[in-house]
Length: 322
Picture (tube, rainbow, N blue to C red):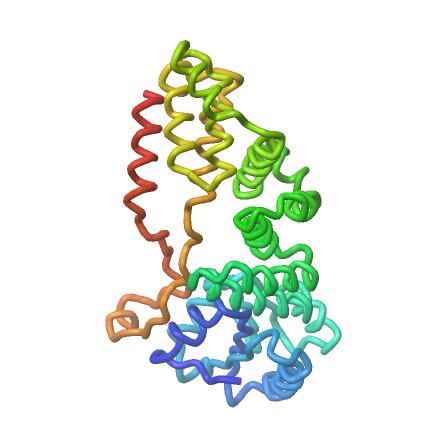
């Protein structure tokens, strides 16, 4: 449990909730129900074994925080508890609520033990991937998927690592649970849809592709888009992403609508696979200006780092489509 002040609210409450859910208990020394609720919340923090962090703010001492949250949720009494997750206040409850009800509230926002285990494995895998150790990362990611099959980051990274290591059969098996999600034209998951296209390229390459024959066909007929697309698939399967995009761009420039825009769709899928995930926001501290202007009880938007190569290929696509 931690006491929230103007000095630590940014680091402990906003940025802290990017790492794990934080339940903020707004209380005051004169509030009788607060004194009853407090020990229950502390007991639950221990019972949930690190799956959420309990924070407290004294409404009398730090009204800047308590007043803003009360206005945000339309609440005028305490005790008032607010759940922060992902750098945002997402839900809350008012009053001395029974323990069973608080558990129901927590279970809506707090990861299960299995989900927490998966998150830890993914974090470890990301460090290994950054070091270029794909094989060791693969073991961590497999454990993460087994612990929490619904963890999309774990599954995406697991399938991607399998393809990077050339294990097509295992990648296809791991992709099956999300194949429908990737194919749904309304709620399509862009990253899984991109994996689906990469899997199809790898499958086509596994059947055998005569690159020399394809290049000869293209040399004799620049509009042999089928040959050029198959060559792009071969490059994609061999992890030559930029080479594949160059081939796809040739198709797009000559016929944007060929095969229902398949070249453009595949090009965008490669860009998606090459795009690094958005980094977590760095922890910060509140300043005197924050207190004067009103605290921002939400995390700042973090943009993915610029990649000159990706920017270049995005511009090429934009020019080809215009």
